[in-house]
Amino acid sequence: MNAIDLHCHTAASDGMLVPSELVARASEVGLRTIAVTDHDTVAAIPAALAAADQRGIEVIAGVEINTDVPNGEVHILGYFLNDGWRDAQLGALLSRIEQGRVVRARAMVERLTSLGVPVSFQQVRDMAGGEIIGRLHVARALVEAGYVATRREAFDRYIGRHGPAYAPRFKLTPTDACRAIVRAKGLPALAHPLGDVTDDVKGLTALEVRLAELCEAGLVGLEVYYPHHTAQMVDRLLALARRFGLIPTGGSDYHGPMPEKAELGSVYVPRKCLLRLRDSEVARRGSQPPPPER
Image (cartoon, one colour):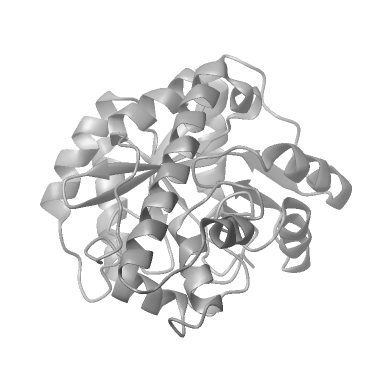
């Protein structure tokens, strides 16, 4: 039985469940350890930790920072932030990203209006529920307004990277994100390194170059176990992890009960991955090991 999920989102970013609901769901499906890794925010961590104490499971304080590279995005996970989630420099960076998201959402709303597909910025803000705004909230507003049938259609027709209403966001490099997480005494890991590739392993040469750069910036982990990764992808990513001395990580990238997203805990993550992350966290901090698992 799988007991670990190291990639989970809440309504603080683009998930559907509030932190207490996420923790409750984790308990229901038999998970013992989850990492809360919202996009560009640590707002859910206090509530998630409080709920975890009541449920008797472990919540790892984390984040997923969205960064840009030519012709795409790279997401950097941060694990074991612990008190680092209150780090002033990390907080300032996340605030800049959050403000950039607001500017971006307004720009997309304006472009949609010019395309004859008007949604209001207030609708988008309401979809975000007062939390950090993302493209998913714009997509939900388009669905609610009846312009598209699904969120995927919203991305494909309007707000995807090559869509007519797409707007760029605050730019941050993957190395900058790694260094910010390291400064906050966290452990950076490269998320879903093969993107949406599902037919065969592609882009391994480019990935090797990226890993070399990120390791110099403090990268510790590589997300090997992921919903879109085939057995062949897992094998090749494990080989890369060994080559670069990285810890394999993994998780469902859970966003809530969405038909197009994986279920919480549905991706098996070997316990040794968590143990290696803990060992690395202890070594980095020079602290005592955490208490035994409940």
